[in-house]
Image (spheres, rainbow, N blue to C red):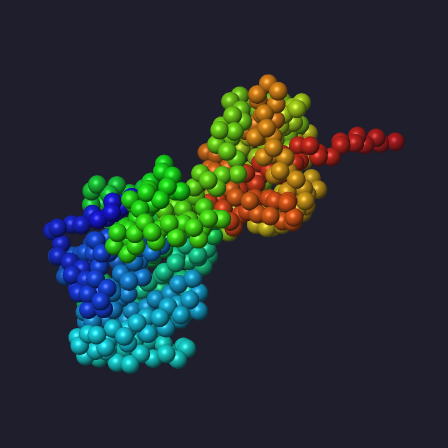
Length: 486
């Protein structure tokens, strides 16, 4: 089996029904390849003390063209065949996608029935009408699609529920799905004597993956060298973080479908299809959130622009930005010193509710030392800009053209050294800013002009956005006018 990046270990002390999933896959004419069989065996482990499935949640992140769909379908169909009256459900990025997935499964299923006497004797004709689509089994079990909404399964029961393409969902959308799933699972252990399972599966995501990415980060922090007692089985396949996502030999080595489902000829063809989007190729076939080829700021220039001293004295411009979906926020200081601007992250935290109080605190403590505040009025930070103005903060005038011009200046000042070899834009090292600089991609706003693409990047870039608006503000602070009282 291709070596996974992280994976729950198979516990040989527990029996497994993974072989039943493999049997269904074989009956369908799609036998499991090694990684699929491993996942099926671990996910199918039985708790000897109860005779029920050990894991209540299964998380699978794997590259495209690895056979994720075939594994899930074999497992779901196997669930339907393992006992009477089982209820299996499937959703994806939208209700339409879930419905289309069902249509494809139903078409394949009827072809497979013609080839397998066992499957044919176990099932009825699929229902295809929207709203009542389902595969039906003679034992009373069903497999149905559902839209990814909070009330889609209201009043329903579930024994195996799949959330596919989990990377698409935002934190709010994912939470709504889970809220809808919870009640469907509560009574099933008593009703059928078996633990229900929720499967979340996907490739790595983009900036919109504010639901799935934190889940992956949490799982990767576990110690997989021991059994930690968690009832979550986790499987993560993809290229290592320090590898080159454009090297097809690297992709082939770490792709669990390579050699089983495709070879180098097909891989080269797929790479050619993504020639204009290397980041998307790294995500799809390396299962990676980003790649070095996507950096706006070359790593050598970014490192050369580091400022290892304290923020220099001067009038401070303060920039603030929300991450997409409010996943995090950042406040940055910027000071103009001669031919240089130096920036420093003042604060970076999850969520957004803390930002305005922190800005007010900065204003109160710094007084005239702060020349102005800068917040983008468009996009995720627009509510902050409105609230800041109503709270009496003096905002530097800022529009899309200004944000774009500042981004272009920032790139030039980092990549084109001054005569002494130093950079005209310097940053005090901070993990959030380094990470944002690595993940940020361009979004073109008009012919030739660009800014940072929040939804095109593959992680939070609030730190670089805050640094960008603070940089603009440092050169556009309003003049202080002393008022005389006569």
